[in-house]
Length: 282
Image (cartoon, rainbow, N blue to C red; front, side, top):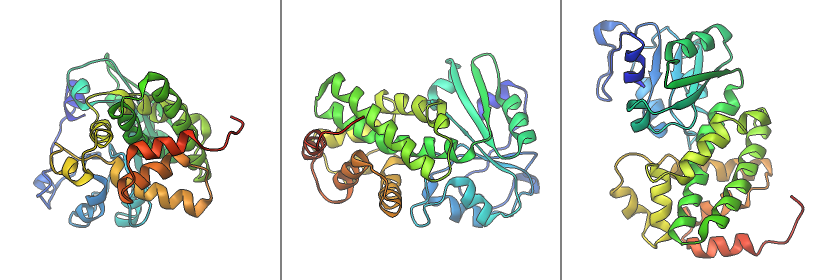
């Protein structure tokens, strides 16, 4: 994203994860967050509040609190304008200037438009939304269901199975997100369905890679130990399990994912249980 912004002639400063002071004491006009979700709070606490809008590129939910990223930012840095940038976007393809579409969301319309125009360019199309809840949840939830997509491939269950599984997964994403205040059409857009398609099918997706390895019988911790980067769907699955339980949401796919990740169930047994559920109306 930094390189994309540089192509639009913006001046950038990168803060290393070990730096606890803004470069030259100046956070600039806008702060973009791009670190693993589960270390976000600790990282923000070490930095002086920037006093400028803060937009997130992070796709996750904080496990301990089940808060969205902008909610964590508002707790640690109260009073700041917050927003999120999400959508189907492999970092390598954004960098290579492959055609990409993103959505920029905030409750502050002026800054939504400002960030949208700052990013928008010939091969990086941006849309804007006021549904920050839906945009953030779409980006976070799709990581969980991408694990199931990978497991489906790792088990060799075929394209029919994957298409059906992802369709039902989108339904679960929508039910949970709407119960938390999102608009249903947001989950049908770039940050929901769009990102789910990419993450569940792409060989470049870390969550997809983890799912494939699980489907082939490898142990979760061993997979994570050798993964280059963070698979946000693994911790987010725990938060989703608690959210659907607390809210009484029907989410059988999420439940099977949780059991595979945290209760020792095999992916094959999880898929068998999904297929043998009682018949119902779509």
